[in-house]
Every structure is written in structure tokens, then in C-alpha cells.
Image 1 (tube, rainbow, N blue to C red):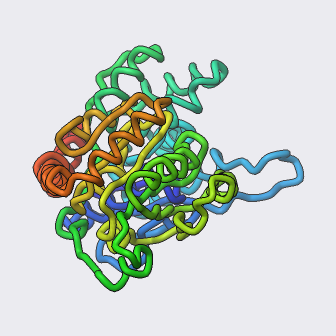
Image 2 (spheres, rainbow, N blue to C red):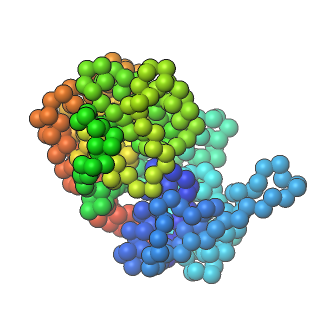
Image 3 (cartoon, helix red, strand yellow):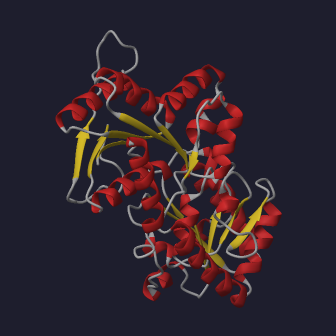
Length: 371
């Protein structure tokens, strides 16, 4: 197959999955062409069967805002013609699916369009009533639509006038790459007295509630001496910094910024925190689980499909800070429980979400759409 892939190149689950999926399909011999406004996150090295085509958005004085949708459509049309694409696989309903459907019409209707819904396009962007008809149209006009969790699939069907089948294909992780690789010297830099290590990885958008991870660390540290690694960057980094100072735990919260590779840092951790307000899947939690890190997270969205409560971690109501602290303390203060959950987390990641299995499902689905 000759596949055009469009995803947001920024630090976030949809961009990571879109990039990793394209790279995995290229390894299987398919020609993959990324069509994005910047180099996708994690597409940081040469790989056979992969091309990258930059979308240049012109700044015409006539337009108050840059016409990204039209620029993306034009680039899709160009690459579809010159590279003889069979299919456009886009991540996010708007504007990517809208552009892809328009490109299909301009090129004569031969192209197929597959849209993967990741959550924000449904739960946040589409919560604005003015976008509802646009999102529904993009979904209905796609030749195939997937959702990254069963929860997201249900929510999409309940929230929009969708007249087509939606297929659930979860996010995935490469267990050969995401595996625990302990580095005692590095761990000693963050926890020199043998303290426990917690980690939070996100894009620090408000929906991730990163400052709450600092509050959890404060509560945990009162009972179990611990440090918290904050990995990522975004709008709430300054808020989390200030909160750490206010709570008097600034010396125990380490802001590491955006990291291209997180395996080394996850391998230091005893526990992963994900106190999100909403998660359609929870890719960061899955990557932690693959590295044998139990998860304490909010019981929201698709997270119960990833984290088995009481087995590979604990799930608590998203507003219940005391419960999150209690569950974290329970894991960190009981080595046997922590070890048992760590092994269960790894088993779940490998058996349910391994790239080899999930990418094969995507591959089959794309072939099915192509007929």
C-alpha cells in the first residue's frame, strides 16, 4: 500500500501514535508519506519507505488567520498525485479528515480516507456546538473510522449523528523498546538516600492536571520519602513549579522538560501518576506499564481499558486527591505489592497492546477499506 499520513507533529499521544504507526507500516514494506506542517515527533531518523512532506501555510494579507485546512488539502492533493497514494490515513477528525475528504474529491474520488479518532477532537474540540456538524460530516464522509478505545467509540456514537461503523483499535507500544533498563547511578542522582521515585509524563495541558501530581507527591512524601520526576512541557508547567514551592517540596519535584525518549526515566520509577480529567486511552500510562511501572490514575475515559484496577495499578475518582495519595502510599510502602503490580503491568502491555499485534490490525483494516 501507498499511504499518506497526517497527524499533529507535537508532543502528545495522537502524534506519537500516528508517527509510530507510520514507521511500523513502513517496516512492513508499505510506502508511507507523512504530510504535516512540521517533522512529526519521534520521526527523528532516516528509515526506508518513509517520506516527509512539509505543509507550508501561506500568510496572505487577505486572511486574518493562516488557511491551514486549505494548505493541507493542497499538499495532500500534490502528494497523492506524485506518489500515487492509495489511502490517506489521518489522525483527528478536524481539520485533517475534512482536508482529506476534500483532497479525495479533487483527485477524482479514487483515494480512500481513514480517520483515527484520538479523543480531543471528540471530547474537547467537538464540545463546541458550532463544530458538531463539521465533525459528524468528516466522520461520515471517511471511508473508514477507528477509535483508540471502546469508551471513545461509544462517546462518539452518543455525541454525534454518525451513520457509519466505528472500529476500535487501541494504541500500542513496542515491548522490545519499552522495557525496563535500570540505571542505579542515574536513579541515585534523583533519589540519593534511596527514596521512592514517582513520574508523570504529559504535555502539561490543563486536562492532564499536572499540578495535582505535585499535590500527590506532597501527600505521599509525608508518609514515604519520595521524589517526583515531571517529564514534558506545556501551559501548566509554571503552575506546577509554583505549587511545588508553595508546598515546600520544590527540592523533591524535578522538572525535566520535554524528552524525546522516556524509557530511561520510566526505568527509574516505582510508580506512574496520571491524574487526568479525561483520557481517551492513556498512552503514557501504557508506556510506563511496559517498563514495569504500576500506575495510579483517574478512573476516566479509556483508562480502565488499559489499567486493571488492583492488578497493574489503581484507578480512583478524578477529584479524589486523598484516595490517590492512599493508593500511591499503598504501592510504595509495600515492596511485594509494588513488584507484583509491576510484573502484571508488563504482562498486560505485552499481551494486549504489543505493536506487532495492533499494527497488524491496522494493516488489515486499511486493506479492508481499500477493498
